[in-house]
Length: 539
Image (cartoon, rainbow, N blue to C red):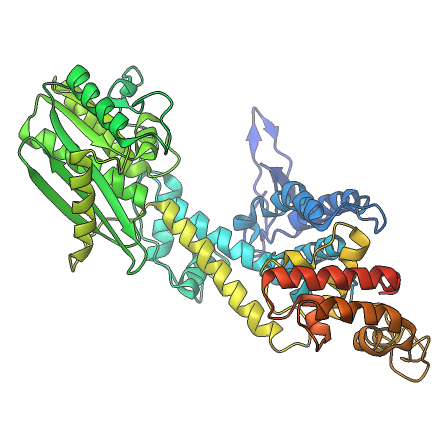
């Protein structure tokens, strides 16, 4: 294969063991089909579309209105069996033309229609709000930004990081519109997120023959619970110190995080010398990171002061589990630094133990360091340390989702649909798929009632099949049609029991601005009305 944006006048001939390698225009590697010479990913997207359609055909077998799976099951089927297939390699084939990528968007829209049993005329924006699934283009932008973050946090000698770093340094928006760097950078600017290069090792610094679990003790006492009396825990703590750590220097560590104002801090307390040291960390730092930072500072104090026997006491089990793990999934950088410190102390014959203790049990040193960590929030300026890559990834997901929700609400506010956002509305759901489908169609106002079908040029007139002189709308069927007067009277009587006298379509279908318990009550009687009138067969 040859890749070039220019015309290839003469194909190169390549031989291996005097056997000429055949020239081809496409080749599949690691599930991605490369197409020569311009690498437009058209062949890959065509193959992907065929594969997804086969999977959609399986999904169709589960969508019968009478006995089919409910919406949640169908969406799980999509997220587990179809969505990963679409997203695999999307950060690479995202460079394809928008017209080719829209074919995948169309397939996702088809899946959303199958899950909700809405019609082809149903607006995509309403389907996304009903299922809480953003557009595929929005999701691919998020994945590209996450991929760039992961690459920039690899070791500096990694070839892909070197290549991406060079692309960033030579970044030209006018020239590099198809590149991952351009696409991810545009998303990063749009979401107002900083992604800075940071070197995080892939391998633990401790040798494989060194057992770090001997230095880290998570066990405190058997059968400890939240209801265990303080006096028993305090006695156990004293027994533990007197039995195992009698001649040890004791260092208590703690981290703290508050939401208003957003602040993170850490502290250590050296009990033998009655010294407390506090730090204010960047607000982006999470609580586990703050706990690890405090442990790291405690180890640093041990190294600098050449203490021969030391025990570090912390109330963070999650931090100790990370330190014991040679392949931690989160907080790799600081965890590896702590592991390196522990191994360094062992080589210098300095005995170090890190012990978990319960929090808020009136253990003197733990209470002192806890107050010190809280006091650190009052410091004006925080120190500068890079956030964990997982926090940046989490921030990308949150900001991308908020941006999508904001755009969704803005568009829905200009429409005449009964759905106005993507929040969960369990009171509108029904176990019976046919009834659940009916509520979904009423929410989008795309139904099989004659007024809507007339607009679609599928009926000769828009008039009610019983009244003959009024348009067959949702409002007419629920509020005015004489055929359903007796059922409507029962519905109104039921609503009067909860002091609701004036009813409208928004109230009956969504619950309007009523409390959650009242919304469940309203929708329960709306569903009874739909079933007893057999309207759910018509809608």
